[in-house]
Length: 116
Length: 114
Image (cartoon, rainbow over all chains, first blue to last red):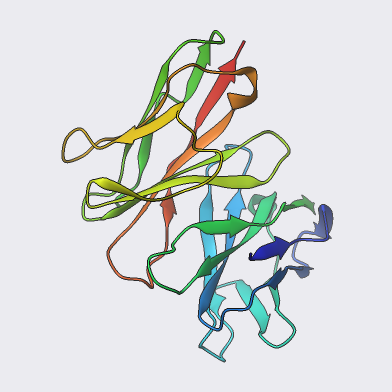
């Protein structure tokens, strides 16, 4: 069975600085997708970025980018120029690419604080 | 931009009562999901639904749970006889057809069972 591990329960960063959140996963599949979701205090789950395992290029979305290391099964999220609005819980999630199995498997999350 | 909506935002119920959580997925989406998040714990998959039937369910999704798409827009989760441990945030999600699509989440329903 696939698992997702986020080893940093809490992180903090100064406004305008860069922070990296870690995520590792375990799978025997070769086709899968990885996601970072943000959950602000409102508790809405917001997609930040996604990565297809078959793509070697790391995904980027404005200030957010990932470092996808497929062999190491590592998928870290880098937030550049951190803003106060980035303060939230961040979840790493995995989804199989096989068949109709579409459920997301989640890490425990990392709580990010942004200090002014 | 279209979004997934959920009602109610908060629900308080007594143990043993039935609750129905409602979701309106994005209109052209074909796959629907329920997840739950107990406070301080991991988000857990409950069930996925496609073509008017359950496509996958987790061990959590026992006989006390059911899902329905009663019309062309709503997607509901029913808990027949709530337990204290059902207290959680319940998220609905949907995605379009296509294996490579992303799931989009609603704002959640916070359920408290007393």
